[in-house]
Length: 199
Length: 147
Image 1 (cartoon, each protein chain N blue to C red):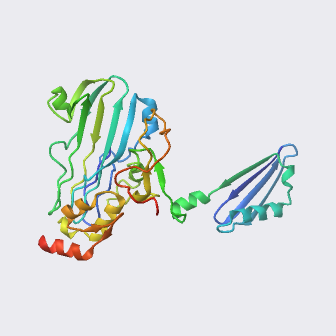
Image 2: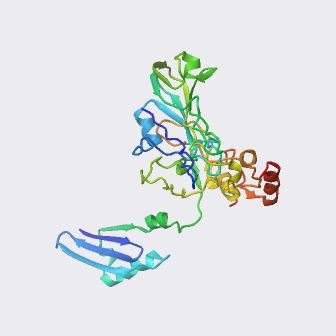
């Protein structure tokens, strides 16, 4: 059984929470070592899905990506939502990235529907997987709240420094210009870019 | 057997000495000295007037690390971790301490993202850490080694 927490929706006065449970509020993330000792799986990555957060005056939370290598044959069943229609933004905020779960077998890569014809990328039962298959399981990001160009520039810089998005994404999504490494605000350039986009 | 236990807390350093042949129990308490935890230990030992060479066991515990994690008053540190798992310190338990509080915020990670570095992406056995030596790596961590 595998659960992945996702990004919370942006709140009216705060960003959405990154990688938390909303519907199953008392679930915790299993440790990588415990998962690997109990199941024939090798975890190759467990990290933020970047940039999955819906932009907004307050942004949505980040989703999580888990990459698995199957060390034995296994059967997979899934019951998920928000694979086709993303978590939506409100009052000018952008959508978060949708959820996805993809399989790679040899040179073939795609959703469970594309590889196995199960009729849905997110809801299926008893798909036979093989040793050596790789799975990429991504939970969605939360939707944003309010126009992204109203997002506090310093908060965007903090997100760049923390590694939640890069400088290009900061300029494209929020019209905030971040220079250097790990990143500082270019206030004058930010004002120019925001003015050019009608702020 | 004479056993001595010491606990260095943020305010007091407590010491207990127990002799399980005579069943004698002695204890004392000294003030802890901020940033110099050994001084409180030595003061407590002096107050109890005990010779270290007469002891069979010396046990040492402290809440200083717990306090440091809670108060965030320690040195600026970085984290080297298995490639692919640099975000885990930030992801934490995916758990909300206050499930019904919509304004709840997660704690900031003990090490910020720019100071969490990946080791080389050597092959890893299930349930184990990478056995390869660490090396600077991941794409978004460039240029942080000097900080």
